[in-house]
Amino acid sequence: MNGEATRTPGSWGHEVRATANLAWPLILSNLTMAGIGATDTWLLGRLGPTELAGAALALNLFFAFTLILLGIVTASSPLMATALGARLKSVTDVRRSFRQSVWLVLTVVPPIWLVMWNAQGLIEALGQEPRLAALGQTFLRGYMWSLLPFLFFQTLRNFVSALERPKWVFVLSAVGIPINFLLGYGLIFGEFGLPRMGIFGAGLAGTITWALLAVALVLVVLTDRQFRRFHLFGRFWRPDWERYARMWKLGLPIGLSMGFEGGVFSAAAYLMGLVGEKPLAAHAIALQIAAISFMVPWGISQAATVRVGLMLGRRDPQGMGRAGWTAFVMGVGFMSMMAVVLWLVPRELMTLFLEDVPANREVIALGASFLGIAAIFQIVDGAQVVGQGMLRGLHDTRWPMVFAFIGYWLVGIGVGAWLAFEAGWDGIGLWTGLASGLAIVSVLMMARWTMRERLGLTRDETSKKIPA
Image (cartoon, rainbow, N blue to C red; front, side, top):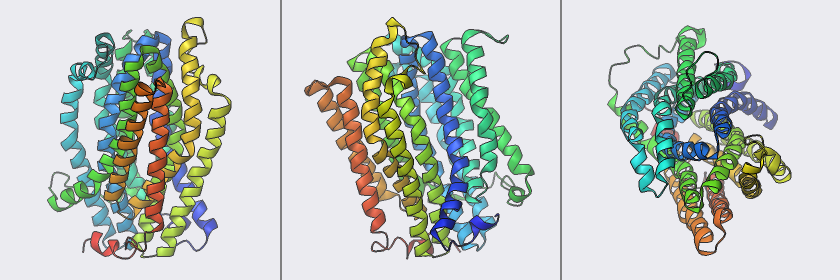
């Protein structure tokens, strides 16, 4: 590993620098994921609100599954970071975790492909209009294949992040968004000599983009001197059932936690579809804007997992505390600034994605009202996602999963659905429920973090989790 960031931090200033140096390439990588979705939303908005609504239903279904799988793969991040912190047999241990994370990807992706290929019936069964379900299915037939390269890219990103050398992720992510935009524009509208494919072309562009990014990161890992010494792909076919089972044990609660969070927004989209087509289109844009700002604390959360995991491997409780609280202040501080932006200029943000013409005025106004609620929950959203990352660094995943279910589904969807359909608040009610759920989760996560030493998370987990 390189330099200063890998030494045991002795000051808060050092920890701020180490966390920032690790977080900003991860943030950019996350923004690539959000940016690909944002460019698709912008381009589909040019096709019309109906196409945008159909694609929104498809994407929300797709990402509900994707986040669960991404969470399972995320188990490799704290495992690799803790092994590197302990330094004992770190090369072998890191390689084991990486290989089995790829085995996990190859295990879980094919069944999800099968579901996505037949998603139209599922979308209709959830109460959506057949024409929107058909458009969503067309989009997914192009986009669903991105799941494999996307998850493979994330496993590689976990590896380079654990080594605290994520700058290659920054370099590749920097070109991901323009590649997707150009491909999407060409394939949707038939420009640059490409065939005109409409909504299918938007999905296909995402698949091609993630495939290119994954291949590029593989080449980096195979050729860079710091990465090459791990021989990640050597004897890849050999099973390691002990590590495979352990990653399921650690990763499944992470996946379910992320699935509960992403799934609640997907469920909100389907409930919004029951309110109407225009509220659904407005919801898709407002959620995309909120998702872009969310990518920053998510990247800080991923950095917190690595930094806390390193300190756990070194058995440094004070270092764990510094790493966690540094990330928390950075994440919540950024989201506080974003709350001000969303509150002050919601309409202007909506018109970035949808032309300000009479036919779109209702959608723009609805979206601006949703962003007003989003401004309120920005702060608690930052707190809960960074809190989850801090706890993952301690290999603590089961209780955060329970917190996510309680907050997002019992409170978020329960309150939101009641306000929307019983109290007559419609879309505003759904967004108010989401804000309430996020607030509950953030309080529970941070309460557990503050009790980490009393619960034995800093004293005992290292000896339990690191194999001989």
